[in-house]
Length: 345
Image (cartoon, rainbow, N blue to C red; front, side, top):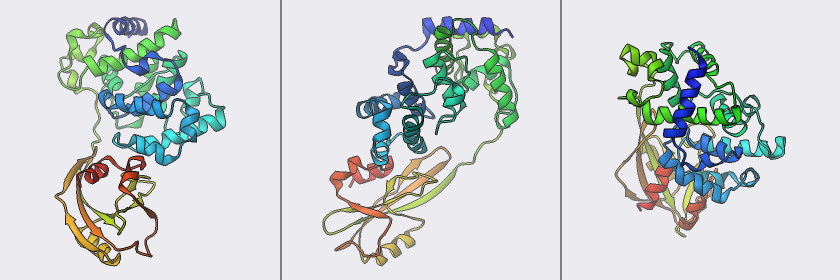
């Protein structure tokens, strides 16, 4: 398949029918494009809009973000999920300032060396901001291209994904790159979001319908192929809301790996019996046991049980955390469901 008609069709369609009102589409500032790309990973546009605006109000440039504390960044990120993105965002800003003098590298290859920037995100920044001929392969674009090409390789296999990257690169525009690359890249994203849907794709509205192998086969929903699927698991977490005589709440820092990594959190126990032992060791008196809250993660269902307890004064043996007054919680990096539980008190 010739790249020329495909690229031209996508570019023209995007100009007429694609999205152009999103705030990160009105700039070629790599800081703003990078921020939007990280936030949009596995998160809906409607959710990202408010977070994007708040982040820019607090951190208007990469220097401000690099100078912030991790707690400030995590507190503003609370509710977006996938918190490793926020930690990598902070690390990346610091590296851009310290290593690159506050200027983002101008090539996809150099961008991909920064923390938290994979090949697809690097390609998006390079295409949008610098007109580089660099492909992207986010979930929407994989769906568009595998259907267009009739690509039946199992994307759970690294070799098949590498082959799809080669196809994606071959289809890129070759002329007027400063204009065509941003438009083409956005066009593929828009087709995946608006037309080439996972279920019931709107093939009649697609500019690539005449070239699409999956449409000709009559089974576009067969693509993309990915056989490896993680099984969902259910898990009960018992959260201890320990308060002292001054009304302060005890929070611990979560481990650097795993769920809610690096965030402040109520102490977590694997069972009610273990939580009760924790209360006894702290010399506390048991308070209220609230109904469980279901929190759905990508491949896990967390049943969050919150139990309150009170101690007359901070137990001397408690380490790895700290006491915080309720009015301090807005500035604390807390997981969104924990923040919600505390607000329901």
